[in-house]
Image 1 (cartoon, rainbow, N blue to C red):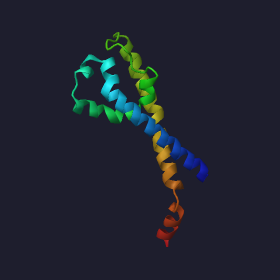
Image 2: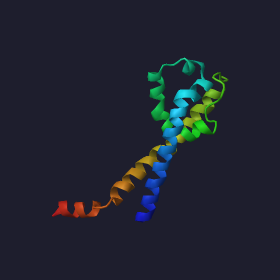
Image 3: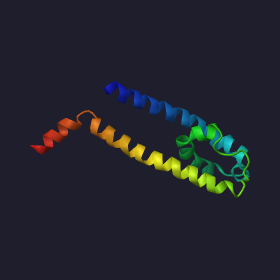
Length: 117
């Protein structure tokens, strides 16, 4: 079980490292190629993009954000539905992962048993 948890930590770390590298490129160059307002944005505004780009870098890399800043009005409902679906799946998954990692952390059982005496 510990090997699985270590693997999970390594995968999460790799995800964040790749995401951070992509986010720096995205904040400096990539956002400007996709949106006219981002092209004119200051470095402070681009710095605000970093945490979001780290979190969702696969969506940005694989075309989740259209190259054109203009969207058809009928596409807005489809995007809302996709967004709702992602959060309905992601929310419970993240909460469950946090609970499992808190329960399975080293010393969790010993500290719980020691507090009950």
